[in-house]
Image (cartoon, rainbow, N blue to C red; front, top):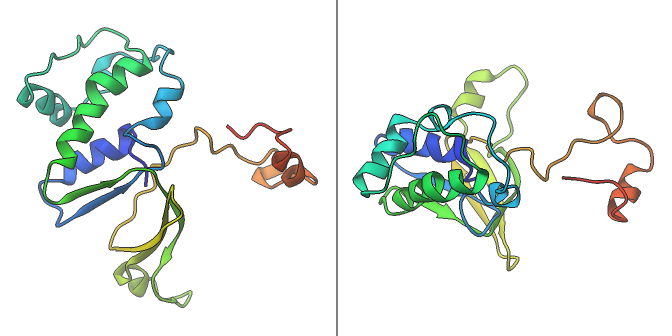
Length: 179
């Protein structure tokens, strides 16, 4: 879930050994959330925001490599590193990226009794997705990695991560920031 830096790097790392990889991304392109704060300079240099595999993708595409010591903006990071990785992944036969699609829910595909952890490991996930047009689909997956991030997914304002009294009403009225 999500096509940001963590998920793209993970897909890149496993693309050579996984039978199939499906990435579900709410945005219209990879790293869509980064586009919202693209003007901000990252607090860490390129050397801490790239991988050997990712840099190899840039090399294979004859794209310029970033200077390890420079601190990129969100836009630079997205446009010169993450988007080329996403394009590379989308071209692979075992990778599918579903843009403009959100994960509505995810659960194990069968009921599991509390004490049966062996069954939990063997039971695939059932993921309900919905496109921007409202079309729902169910994906079945042996593994699920939630890299949806926290941008736009604010925690409740109440104590201990719970909703505060009246918070749902205030959120629905746009009076409590959610992202």
